[in-house]
Length: 365
Image 1 (cartoon, rainbow, N blue to C red):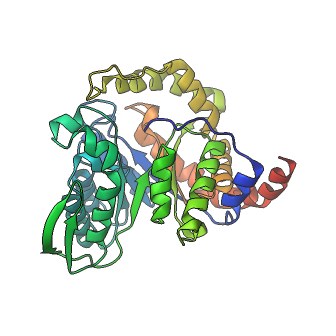
Image 2: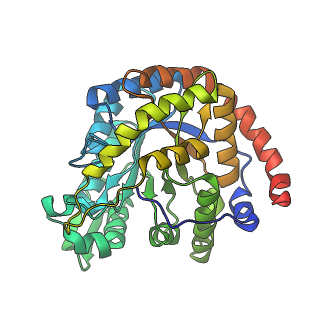
Image 3: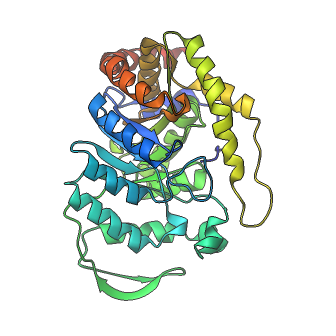
């Protein structure tokens, strides 16, 4: 995910999305397979044992930042390897997939798991992936809405689906198998046009790790305006938000570990190859790490629980996705277990306290 344009939260914008904050957020893991596939399987099993409700899998091609090229394939394995855990994609890259094929996979996973699958999709980036898979830059730039709508029609429960668009055109064909129920779809959004597209269809957002709570609140306030204009109730939409987490006895110790582990991992994002041959943007990694440490839950168990609850209260998101692999290959499984023991039990009470205090804080604005 790449950052949105900088945004400054206003009291009005925050209050718009905070109107329904008196809910306890669901807390899941966000896994990029940074330490390889076997480790990712171990982390998912550890998440179920620790009491997490779900894990969400990122999808990347041709770079070592994330080593899962098919989030749906890995999701299928994890659904079979667990008994209670929900597994989502955050996100399957729609610009390099045929939406009907992806919808068929989603229906299979949903049916085989008894409804434990969650589908998140993304536009992706202007990378060489578009060349390799033959979908091209034009579909990336102009075909996301058509792809998303075709995907949703296939998941709608209709008996047949046809297409007559710019990028997809085919005669009516039977939907086999048809979905047993509602297959939820989330949209990863890092730009205003994608936010508006999801809002116009009432689809929940997957918000990335790069923005702070204030910027996410502005994004969701913008979403709420567009959704309401299209007849959707934005207060019922279950948005999800990714948060880097670092846990130690105190904040300084947690920061030291992340300052050691994050830069070499984040440096692998420089492996992206743009389809037009131009060099990708190279951010200042040290400055970006310091930004992440400022805006995310890093510190003791109490500090992390407080920060997560405050994030849910400020933004109004229903689901928090914890990015844990920044702890390093040797420490991530232990971090997952510790979060389950020391942080998850604290979030309910902390979130309600933060929600109760938020209106006064907004008034002080």
